[in-house]
Length: 104
Image (cartoon, rainbow, N blue to C red; front, side, top):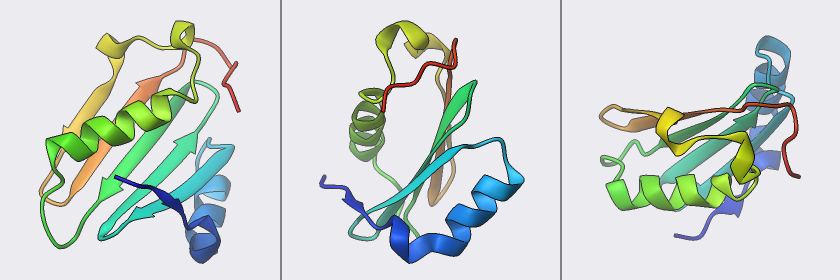
């Protein structure tokens, strides 16, 4: 799965996220029919995976999660604390961060 940064095409979404949540960083990626919204805040990171044409596959969830976990130092999160909520065409992944240090 190749994620392409399409953040510039979602300026309104990004601005609303930054204005209305505790997020300080928002990026939007596309992989064909799948859209991924990645946000970082001081105490957590959130990943939203959306595919309106079909259910999101487990392999996609794992690939996306592993891709974004590379941004966060391993000592700042615990895999056991990661929460994954799967709905029909949306998956939300929440990653609690133990400190405000997040790798860029």
